Length: 286
Image (tube, rainbow, N blue to C red; front, side, top):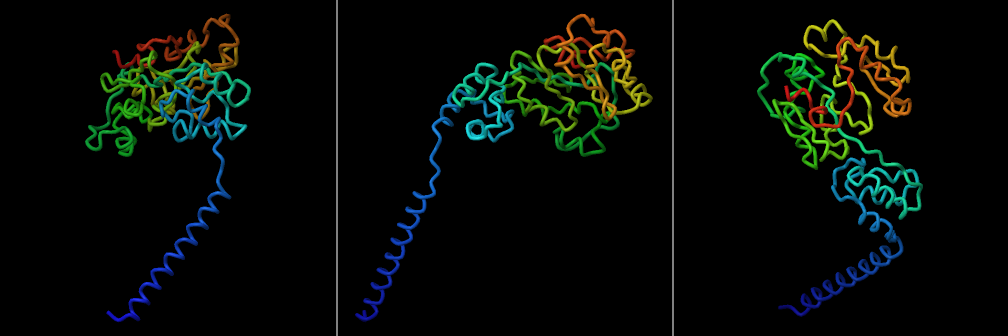
């Protein structure tokens, strides 16, 4: 082989090696200069979190929440729902923040379509998910706001707290931590996370006027607003034709109101809240 070509080849290799060394040293120096020092408190918070990776805190897993609660002064310490009060206190101690109360809560199904004998508009054939079925004319139920019953909520629950019976979700309050993963998965938004101490609730999510509700459901809310007018605590309101309860205000008022809203409701859909599986998924047991 021509010695000149050999020398050129060797020179080229040497040149490339030199360039590689220069860039390597440059990258190393840049990495050292711009490196973000890891905050040891993030690891401490990670150790005390429940580690469920449920996403109920609103962040991408436990690590995302740990970084946020340590580095952002506005992120509260009580967003680890599986960990409840004990974890909230531990996170507060690590971060030096004020302890944010972790209120125990449970998911509840705001729908009574089985109890109300709601029929179907058509037989759905397609992707066996609630999200898929809801795209076909709002779902197969005559009530377009009703639970579709294909179990997206059960699939989304990281704690196995939801089972399906008669195509309706039953929530086990012993397993439910109130993370809200099921509520996010429900395309009809019929699952609501409410405080365990709640005194009353309305298992109905319809926005339809009373005339339509009466024609398709035997127990559905007709938004007559009698509950709003009769509540002595002023804890009930109707927005966009849907009843909302301020549970904090209701509980603070005390038992002296004697659940007037429950007694006055002409459809008996305004009910006392009892922490039992047959309550949060009562309609499915029928």
